[in-house]
Length: 168
Image 1 (spheres, rainbow, N blue to C red):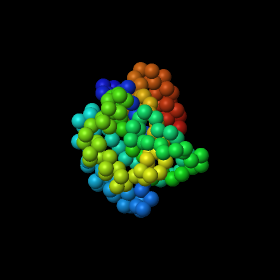
Image 2: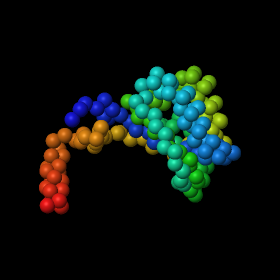
Image 3: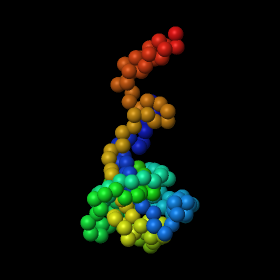
């Protein structure tokens, strides 16, 4: 089992909504090929361990932004019925405080936030953030190997016996 420097980090999962005048293809292209390039140096500066995009759409009932999405500003009451989201942004951070403090950085304010206006539904619920969740990240598998150590040995042996029984 190798040491994992990400163990105990906070995983932030944010559901975002595209500007309604953009097609999904236009939104995904801008998010991946323009916005991400602007976010990367800011994320590196602030010790963000991972920034990932999931290009997916679906529906969910909006949830008031938690402390994990300081860029989400609710204007009035949120809808009580499901609305579309167009992607999921995931951040892995060593601390929530460091992450939220990063949104005060002049680079975020002057470069990233204006770019968010080019792609997110800033006039919609949560300023384009439909919901955001945070939680402690706990690896169970890392780099294709168990991250739970000796705790899993009994089940590993049972799994191996099960596999032998099925192949024999």
